[in-house]
Length: 106
Length: 119
Image (cartoon, rainbow over all chains, first blue to last red; front, top):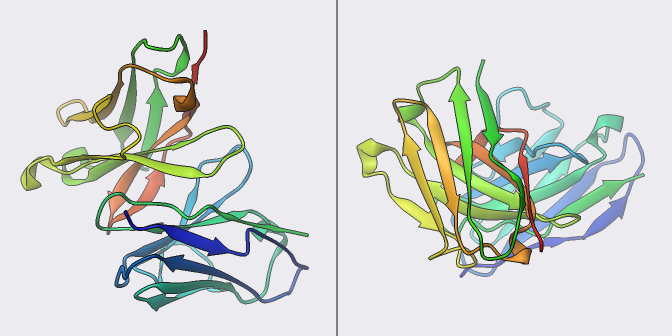
């Protein structure tokens, strides 16, 4: 099975910072990559699908890029509500494996 | 408004069974594939199972960790997706979420239901 590896596992940042999270697949997954945000005690919130397409209602400070095995999620200017854990997920084919998560904290 | 509501969680002994339900509203349920994802306490997200639409054969897929023990199904007339969980293990303890599948992504999620497997 394809493994999804995120880095870093956690990061500290300040409001206004540019934040980049990386997700690497163990084999090529084309652009079949989703990103989610999760806050404690809440369901995951979809952010991006097909590697770079924003879900409806997601602020434009979020962006995704990449294809093949290497992907990034970028938050251009971190806002207080963005402190959360972020997950990548392989899509389309199964198993739709998640990365281990990246916790963004102050 | 799209809503997904999971139910059926609770405390169950190892080896026993439990059936989760995901009741959908606000959209034409039969037009969408559905997914179950779980999260063990303090851990990350784990994809569990997927069921396609009847139009595409209603294909069911499972994570290796649950294959042969869990069965996903759907009742389009009731707008409900099910997850039948048999031979439960302590490591199945988690919050179980259902999600609507759109463009191979979970675009709407339920609030989750907690399953605790313990003697």
